[in-house]
Image (cartoon, rainbow, N blue to C red):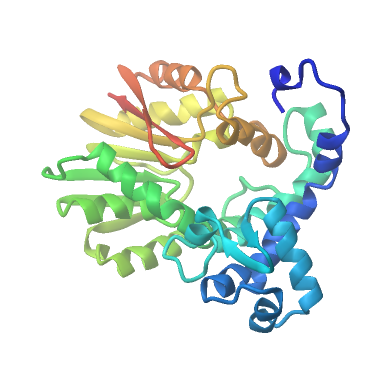
Length: 340
């Protein structure tokens, strides 16, 4: 609750109680996904008894889970019948093309969550105190990331391609740094038949990107560069270099080192296109972007969610002439387009 909303009311422990028990929200959503509760309801199974039969669960357990999912906003309830909210229908029904349930395999993996058992120490250090060394070469968690997070990236990748290349009428040489699943570069190739993409990432991760390029029918315009973004020779003459969900892993100085390399690899008039969680200058709004700083504190030595002012300064220090901030609705991220 915002401070102004709390002013003038009697103190209550409700928020504290809810937050102490917030892990139950995560566990309930995961159980709903694992049991395919949302798919069952979409199929017309709306009572606890029918949902339980479809999901192979007890009626009592299903009723309690569905009531809880209703309380926290993922289901609706009329009498004894449950329904899907618009968000759940779009993103949690396994039949939906926008299904995001696979994200639990990364976001709720031990590689991520175990770090937060050491959050007190991370706050003291100013960086992760957990055992997962996510920035090590070829860490297996990034293969899991590439496969699990694809549904979340499908829509923004298409939106980003249309934003950065609205006319799709010119030959483009594109470098996709830390490509992961490859969807961002692939979207440019799908959108523009003259776009040629080179994806850079660890070799094990690039296997996922190549699979996706093949499935999208753009493999003939899709190449790979295996290795570290800080060590590999990029080459030169790129019209666009993509930096999607990458800079937040590092401190400002490290980002600027990388951006100088990006600047040198761009053709004259080329652009760096960055997708990030970008909070406002107050660093507490919008909530999803601002809260991403906590994720970086938990899992990286020095990463952060940077404001546009901070990102613009990094690009300027690296030699870019100007940077523009763009919204990318309905996603929770923003785009920075920086001109060489």
